[in-house]
Image 1 (cartoon, rainbow, N blue to C red):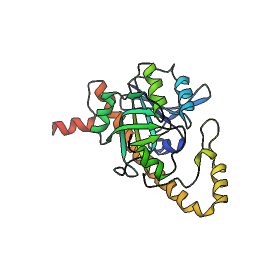
Image 2: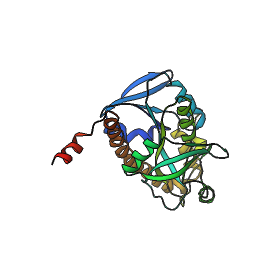
Image 3: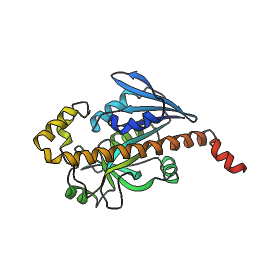
Image 4: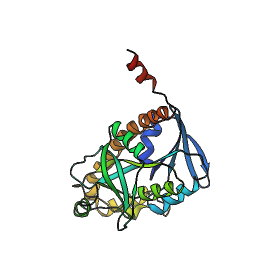
Length: 254
């Protein structure tokens, strides 16, 4: 099994990189991080924030052999049912303002659910950060969570007949407003610039505590996500080869 996992930014991948030894490989102007997990060869791609960067990244790695695709990273909750650190797996994804809905691969969805993810009816993909609680509650009528890349990743995967699923961790709740405008701190390639964040904090220093709380929550969320994705992919890889992980075989024997 060859699994492609996409994240928007390095912060979403940082905890997993500490957990596993990933080796970098240059593909065009992007870096793909590779590791062996179970029977799976895993490729991690940092696309940059936004659909345009996600599409560009997916197209850049289209020549690499892959058998499944996982759009992963952070998501904002749109319902009060979800807390920071909850892992959600989407049944379908849709662009905000669009009319086409894409369903995720059923096998990958079910495997995530059985691994402990909460099932979400829909993820919305937005072209901008959804910053206010009012916006989140309005969108919560239609969807469970919001991100900025899943629709583009799933659509590109479907164009290649590649089974794909969106699995994300909640990094901010529906009642939590964004303390700064992150869109002002993102470069054209979708990378968050620390300088831009510091500039906004300098203009509104009273928001520093909220920024720090969001940062700590994001670190916790990234850790939970890494601890989910690693065994999820490992178990998928053994099942795809008609095997079971050693720890499960031991349970079955005795």
